Length: 153
Image 1: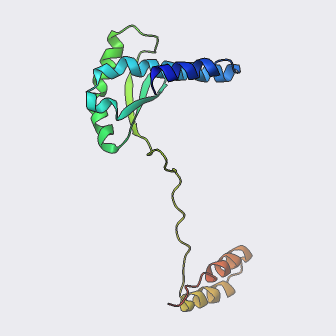
Image 2: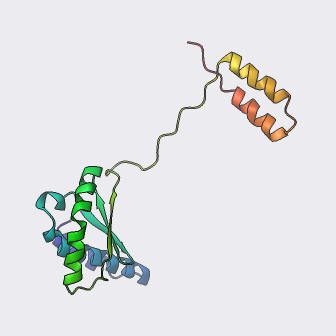
Image 3: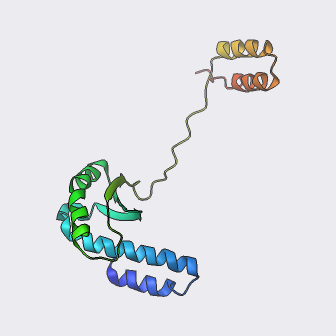
């Protein structure tokens, strides 16, 4: 996001409640930190990673793929040295954690697996076993399973 858009959005939203102002201040802090650290990364890596958060003394960086995450891990000690030597508004960093972010536009939810499909013979066997079970909940579950008969092809 260009700096001018960032500042306009921040000033527009800064007139909100206290909790939102705290969140906005944290986001501005992360944005500032990214601007301070990025000159110390190779140019091809800068567009592939971003500062995601700071938890305690750990800087969390997100990369767009496992390959870029590995390259960021390689340069992590350089980022720690920059912050240790520099006087900044951020806590002294003791570690860098690099994670891979989900691609934009993709849901993190995994697709639902297909329902179990039994042959007619297997379904009949499961029903037979269910008939001999004394536990009513288990018997009901097995009967429900037996209803998943695969359609004949």
